Length: 417
Image (cartoon, rainbow, N blue to C red):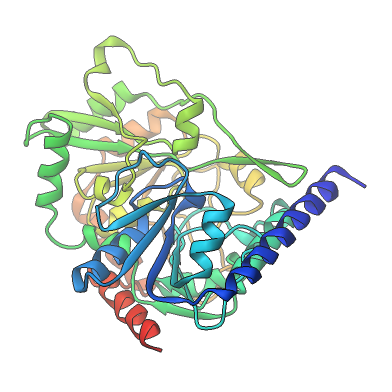
């Protein structure tokens, strides 16, 4: 028996034990007003799509009881949310007795849903760059498929924000159920006037109200070995001093740089900057709510993070810095967009994955620091705004600041059933 098969057998045995416990918990009634929430398998805190749904539900009524699974109970939550340590027994007990489940990732293998319960899957990205699920082809492990299939079979609704997602998600999430094209709740905070969030973030970090912020947030990376996942990390090749200088030359004002690494990567990587720019750089990797950060910044740089889409919908300038396009595509199995090694070729959607869509990415692409500097210096607001508008139309985007309200409406309907 190969190592991957042994690992899968071990996981199946563990899953069977969890399933038995779920079945035993069925002697307890489902609590109609109880809502179980989790983000990023317990690694996340009060953030992403679930945060904004929960806030809307609480705004409507204080009757709801929210249980939120977290690995780190030191994370801060509003007092109307009960933090629960993300242990197997806690998950089983609270999931088995909750009327509604809200998650942006996958439930552990062996989780079982009861009749009369409803599972709202928001996912943690909408229109993205990197392939997921079956679109990853051979890079999608057997164990990942089993976990995905077990989770997707329990889902009642998957939240989307576009026709693009509706085409990609069936194979991407291994899911054939109902979609709710209502918009992404996490993007509600990005819609319309953002002055409140701009002032809040500057106050939090002791910045002047006139300071401008560019955020650099590369995507999460992982490796697979014998079916097991592990976090990949490496040195950052981006020249932050050069970025800040280019921003000031192009846009004027005093610029500050926020770095947001995925929390698991941040734990492994030591950030080291020279003294000249140290005072102008802030590590915001451990902030729970990426969307609230985005709402307060003036520009955004990433490689393949779907937050690029969120930022651009709000009119924030987005710059792609991807110094490993070929390698990343090979590791991922495929990409949702047709990236090439030519930074100046238009990047269109992968027609195999989204055949009904005809879209062009509105962002400049850089594969080295020289190209990134030039893209910043040559940025044209009007041309960028028109490209983003065309992009939003081509994917049939829903972005109007009311996604959380629509999902809360549906959840309340489920609760009364």
